[in-house]
View 1 (cartoon, rainbow, N blue to C red):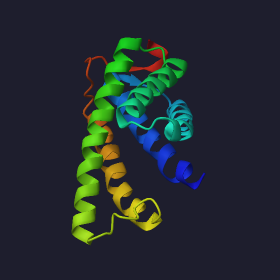
View 2: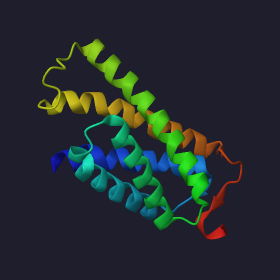
View 3: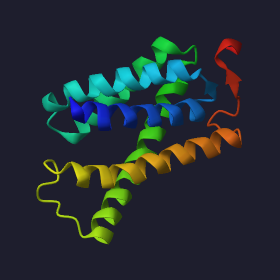
View 4: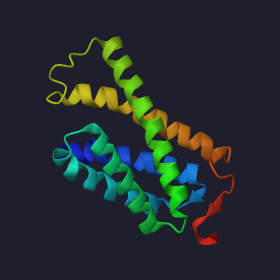
Length: 154
């Protein structure tokens, strides 16, 4: 349960913000939070049943897209493309964040799942980086499809 609250939900909310920006939709914060919480909980619950990373990521993309379809009026193909690109960005940042945090601080990765401090130390930089990228893209009004609109304008 602690894993869901500390990692899955914040990760999903930050990625939801990036998807929101990339798709050109400006969902209100409460809808973004709902997408993130729903996706984070469902993802964490299904994680033990998806043993292969590729299966888990495919399911994660589908859950994210379905969550956005529930709360947004944006076209489904735009959401799917935005989710796929946002998750690719997140995974690249996650890899580099983990690699450099472990290397810089000489952290022991053998018991990574057991050590909450190691998980938090490698998680916070990636969360902050993706959040800042999303904020920068939103501030500069950059989206994949060029049309920025509020949710009510669709």
